[in-house]
Image (cartoon, rainbow, N blue to C red):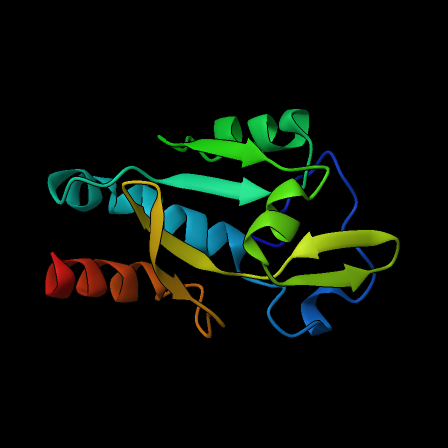
Length: 131
């Protein structure tokens, strides 16, 4: 995910005007609100971001998220998995992508994610159609 907002860190200039940047918080909240459905289907949710573990821990605690984040500050997964990134100011961030991973294999990649608010619906529907 590009960059969930945090009151402890400044937001890059013109963040809301960058296509695909806005929407992390609502996306996280929707996954939180639907975690029981993912669990029932046998899936575990993780957030992936380039922000520091400290940054992500603040977001997780403030939003009371029942899932963990993976911090990839060095962008190791970006190169290993060829994940899409974007440059904003002096930052390299992940573009919004949702991966469904089964038995260590990426079964589905949702990219681009057009509607962060509805991404959880697409993910649940894909899982139900492909179990």
